[in-house]
Image (tube, rainbow, N blue to C red):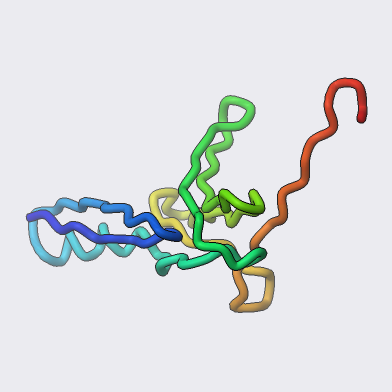
Length: 111
C-alpha cells in the first residue's frame, strides 16, 4: 500500500511517498513527517522558502527551511529514539518556531 502526502513550504509543494503492508503501517510512516506546512518566513514574512539539507564535518546531518529573501532558516529536529521522525524546532518552552537569522561569516582576511 502506498500513500502520498503534500507538504507546502513557502510557494513550493513537496510530495512525500510512504509505503507499508497495510493502512496502519502507511499512516505510521507518514507521521514521521511531524510538521505542518510552512507558508512564510518567521523573520521577514516572505513566502520564498525552500528545503535545504547538508552534512557538516562528515557526520552531522542537517535539514532546514531556508528563506530566499533574508536567508533566515528553521532547522528540523529529530527524535533521539527514531532519527527518521522529524519536526520543526521551537523556541524552548514555547510553541513559537525557532527561526534563526542569517549571520554572514567573516572572510579569510577577517573582514
